[in-house]
Image 1: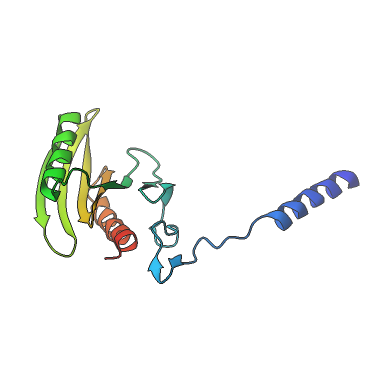
Image 2: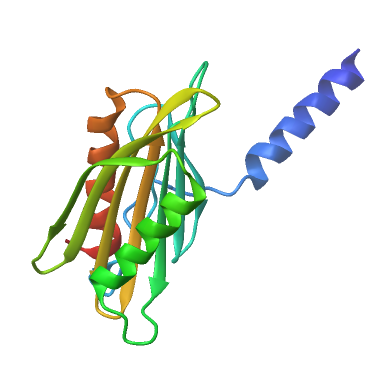
Length: 174
């Protein structure tokens, strides 16, 4: 019996001693600028987790008991062939509509400024259930950025828009 207790104690001591100490909530700065891949956990609302993160992509997912898991996807793509922002976003919208025949947009507006953006919201049906979507498309310098969220109820829209704002602030510095 003593040998088992000693073995368990040694294993636990080894784990605690060799476990790397990392502060995932510490802000990440590079020469005074915000890192393109900041830590996420310290600003996400409850039940949201980071599924994937890189300089070009970020996927966040909300834990739910039943139903559709709300998901937010941030993607960066390089501007090619001197395509303008309106043409690029029209191509994305047309592609989404052809991929999802039941997709309908309730709102579609362009906002010009320091950061050109197109804001879309709508819905589609998946297996007979209504899925709400929100999209924000941005252009900054020679890159395009796409934020897309899917969720099951209108109560999630405020939370999704808040997360959108935080992602844009952290990734684009606006």
